[in-house]
Image (cartoon, rainbow, N blue to C red; front, side, top):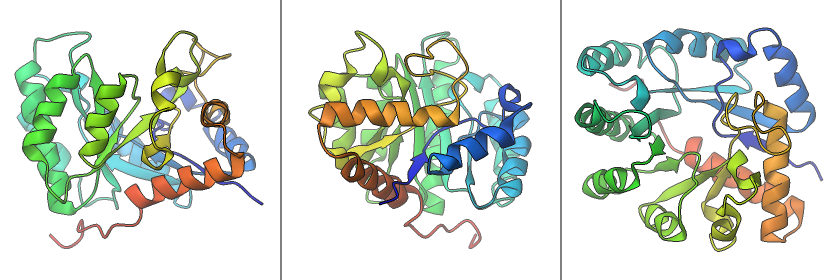
Length: 265
C-alpha cells in the first residue's frame, strides 16, 4: 500500500533552495511526500512564495502572515500591505504568526497586536493559523484562550514544550507540529509525544532549518521528513502504514477540508 506524506511547514521559496529547489521537490515526491505547505515570513518573501506555488500548484500550497521576528514599529503598515495580497492566491492558512521572545523583547507589545490582528484574518476567512512560539508559550496561550471560539483552529508549529503545554494547546482545538527536534538526543520531546494522541499530531521539516539527526546543523531538505516520521513510528510503536495514514488524514483535515472564504469578501 502506498503511504503519502505532507510536509506541513517548509520554506521552500527561500534562497537556501534556489540552486536545486526543483530537484528536491522531485526527490521528495519519489518518497511519496505529496504536498508542501509554505508559511510566509514577511513582505519580502510573499511574492516568491506565491510564484513557487503557481509553478507547482499540485504540490505547493501558500500561507500568508507576518512572522513575529519581522514585527517592528511599523507593523501596522506592513500588515496593511500584506493584507492587500490576501486575494492574490488561495491561501490555506494564516502563518506563520505568533510571538518570539528568544532573540529580542523590544517589540513584544507589537508582536501581541500583530498576532491578534492576524487571528482575526483567519476567523474572517475561515482558515487555520500556524503559530510560531519561542520562549513565549504563556503569552501565546493567554491570547488563544481569549480568542478561542468554534472557528479558531490551527497548529503550534515546531512544538518542543512540556506535556502540560501540549495538553493545553490540544484542548484549544490545535494540532502539534512535530519536526526535527523529535530526533535530537536529550530533547525530551519523545517522552511527551508518546503520551499525545496521534490524531493531534502533524509533521513538518521547517526546512531549511532544524534538520533532523543525523543531518543536524545542515540544510534541512524535504526528503528528511521521512526521518522524522520514522522516529515518530518508533515512539508510537505502531505500523508505519497506520501512522502515515493518520498523519495524512490529520493534515488534510486541518488545511484542506474546510471552505475558505477568501474570494467571498
